[in-house]
Length: 285
Length: 264
Image 1 (cartoon, chains in turn green, red):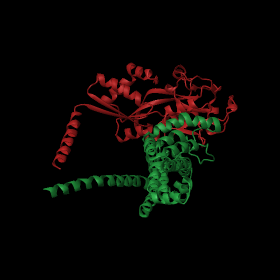
Image 2 (spheres, rainbow over the protein chains, first blue to last red; image 1 turned 45 degrees about the vertical axis):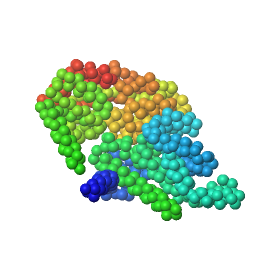
Image 3 (tube, rainbow over the protein chains, first blue to last red; image 1 turned 45 degrees about the horizontal axis):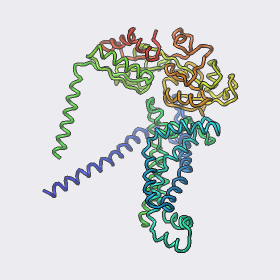
């Protein structure tokens, strides 16, 4: 009797576990089956390397959006990575543990704020500041980068803290015993021992930044345009799909799915790099 | 496991029962233009009060979807807000049920109050890039437009004609966000549905004609688009009754009360 119920539980758990995997498979299959035919029909080169996006004229080139997505993500990293890593080192090395235990969950609350709210703050507060001080329309690459940089902070901070705390205490004690200051210990010991974890945190943050849609639609201005400066308005791959999906039919709709395929590939690459980096850290331990 | 099974069976039978309930009532699905969607919902609610043997479901999706689903039969009535109906709609019976003006709007701080259609075209094409060229201050113009496929955008571009939107124009995905963008940016220009103009934005005169209900009804204001209800084949039965209701005095009153203009 006991054996049967044990097996039953195992089966149910297996079913539920597979449902998550099959959801992923289904999504991948769906996007590919909707998007790939278009890519073959239209031509991969024209699709990826032309920046003429005029659905009503049958022109579907997403180069400008690929560039925009990369710039926005890069910008978010420039804003978010130094802030996040510095914050992680401060919290794990300089302040007493109990303070960290208060501050870290508070930072993680940032991740719980809906992206619409970030977008709203970007539109109402950040964009006017940029417009009045630097010119341009305000809704721009710069504002999108700043908003995304803040949005990826919790990811970077909490994973970085975990990997910094995983560095054996004896390393630090050894360094401190040799007369190094805390800062010297961080730069010469801790940062080296926790490097792969920090890199993984940044890559996961990147994954989040490149996939973010709502906030970007609200603050980036959405013009299909290769940006010449940080003050230009841009449209990312995700924004393109979300903006036009409701109206798109026929070839236009397929082109949006093909945009999804490109995005999917980029995110898979980013995630695999991150998981390799994380695995490296596990092996080291 | 047995409990699970039971649960599934109960759910399925419940679904079957609920589907059975719809029988005996005529069901009409409307789909299409998001600009007309809220009005259609209001009209459908009113109609269902007096005709409780009909169920009307209203869906959005955009004008393109309206035409497509009326053609495919996915919806009995398609809604479209285009100036000229495309080729795909030639087999559909189109009825104009309302009109909607498109207001060209700027920030209230902007001194400019009047533009010609040529100036509007040049601004959206990027040929005029500074407000001083059209009588405003020496500040660059920020053009705000809608996404490709929007009924408002295609109507606007068809009426003004010859628009090849400049590359760095901002794109917003609804009338509401355009209004917010214009209200926040003193240098910007955009266009929204006439019913959505409020004190935060300033509608411009186009070719010296005010964008007001009066001028639109008189036919003086240029930027007006019709709103079509599309039916495949001939109208009959409940569909005909419903469209009749929309065109009736009562229906037109509802349309007018919500900010659109009557068809006639």
